[in-house]
Length: 222
Image (cartoon, rainbow, N blue to C red; front, side, top):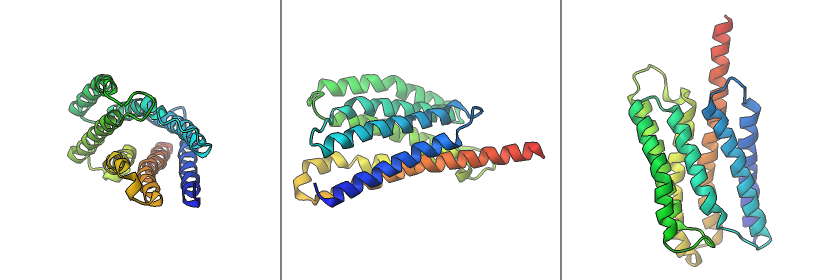
């Protein structure tokens, strides 16, 4: 493994650590469940990705971990956006997505490959589910009649980062089939860009939520 791999792993690990500890730093008991779930998801992601990096560095890769974590992550994201949604229609759509998630993933796991390798159809199904949830939430904000800028909604940042992540990361499975034809460094950077948008959106969501709550408390104090 070359220096580009280790630099990418270090940057990605630092991004995940920053995301998790930012969420923990701003966390308060009065914050709603969706914020707390996002912090929990950040912690789970840090744990899983750290395990995968350890396996890769010591050449004992266990990519099947993503077969379990992918649906769990998807469930977290859809449920968080369900709770954050303003429109009842969007909430019902998210309920449908959550109900279809185990069915779709189960069907994908009937197909090869087995759990010993990453199940690309299942991962793509989870990405599609996250994409629909993120798009529906952003459309919900656009149609909202309240005179509040989009960037004042904390989960706008999460949904935007998730939208870009899904669009970019959906191209990785095709790239894997042509992996030997492209530089490994470019492949690593491609995945890192997608994750930077996603977890950068998480961090922006944490910061925006903290700032919004601070302004509300200041107004109440006055």
